[in-house]
Image (tube, rainbow, N blue to C red; front, side, top):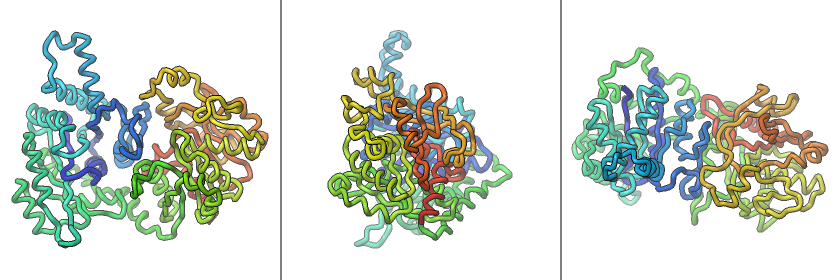
Length: 542
């Protein structure tokens, strides 16, 4: 029978529940256990696909096409496995299933209630995820923080499962301990309140992960132990670290892996969870000192006066993975595409960078600025990597400025354009007209045949690859001959539908765009080949 470890947050969101969940999973996996992870989002949205990335962060896409929370990406990167769609649920998805079942008379005429029927559906989904992965341990991250109305049904599901299966459920609270500058002392009171809120819904945390800017000291650990009803050895220090990949090693210093196994009464495995390969990767990252400067031209990172990076989380991590493998310290800078629209000469700042990435996105805002940035990279021989929309805009730029098709455009922005070098996928036309937008894009993993003698082939070292997608628009094959005649060649093609997947420019150090999202498949132990090739080109440019 699978063991379930529920991870909830206290005090405030955004303090690292996802990384903590993934790190515990990494520790257990390093000891030879089979581990999977589930994310629960307390939103009415059926999936994450319709959520604004500035508000919610990056939309991660699984191999089987689920649009989900960015934490699923952390699970994949830490556990080095592909997470299936079964491992993501929202309030909306759970309610939708229960309502459909009621409509189909599957409750035999009983009154369907929030409790117990909604929590029972949550438990059914958790069991399905455990069964599909044949997991020894199922990590379950509950979104939000304790005390919020939105996640009460999921906490209730956790409580019910704990009651049903004694010895098979463990609760972890990730709580923030502030160190007010004016006081200069770490404060435990917010964590005490968070524990009381958990107690109020019938749950006592077994382990508390004490997140803070500083490592937890003994007086604070003892205080949390006394007032939160846990052993001092169950209060684990979780200070800020250089990279998120340090977290599993930090947790093990406090003996977290052993405490979990002791609580489940599981004998420790002989290999002892040394995390050797993981530790070697972390050491390599910490020793990289020579900088490599990468600019990301986007529009999903500003909220008021604050700059957020979560909108492009997988891109950032993929850059790090590849840079560390090349013994380089990545210096990533956010470049606002809209600034290049207002001031065309502003693109000259790109010459400061060793490589430029134009990531995915939607809509017309910032498009002209991105096109100007792409043109500058093409002309000045700066290594360029275009992801999804980045490829499409590179095609538009090239068609306009090299092929002489001055009105070349995408039907996403101009449905009536006379030269749709980027056009709507046939199956998407009706969906867009009928506004059936949720979960209806070209999603998940698709096959790509790599052309011999290209940069793509030298990167992948394989004739056929599989990459994940999330888009409605595609490079128009009617313009392929004109583009290739001018040396912007197709180096990757989907064999089933003859769709253009990768294009690259001959005679340029590195100018490559892909319709896919390769960043979603990059792992710290296995950096993605395209990002590796891009970083190598950036090294040469530097």
